Length: 238
Image 1 (cartoon, rainbow, N blue to C red):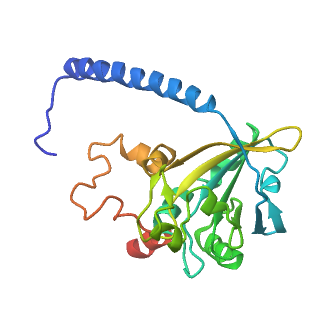
Image 2 (cartoon, helix red, strand yellow; image 1 turned 135 degrees about the vertical axis):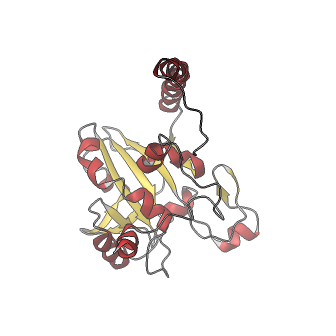
């Protein structure tokens, strides 16, 4: 970084204005893409999904909590695991403070994992999270929305992730799914995104993209290998 170009104030302002023009163009493209996302056709949710939550058995309709829109995060936490995926935990650190703001725009939020509820509750307490998190241990929900995969489906080429054939050995992958509930109580699936589609939803990544070193992952064995559970950072620094 020490040999980076250094210029006068006037030259810097000129370069910044050129980049600003590109940033504005990108924002306009993003607004257009967001509009097209909202205009996607919907598919009805025909299956009844039941989850284990703090209040007992909860249906998909219950997760709306009286609102018409629902965002679900497919959180990787397998039944035999003792802790949630560190990558999903990295994303989940973004959620606590946003729930009241989403509620003001008629949106509810919930995470769904396959691990049993006591494990989810214990891990949430460890991480200091308070957002709604339910167990789909006895539900097809994460399988139906391309976030969990049965070995037999992978073996016969029937598994799908990010709208393409899935051949990996991991039983779960992350994603977001969005639903709408109309006045009659009918529920529709409006959108899902996976893989790099999750990047814009991570506030840390957006902030890192502003600094000179960026995400600084080029020398790592694989991207995000630096990410740890936030209480592990505290242990390391202590």
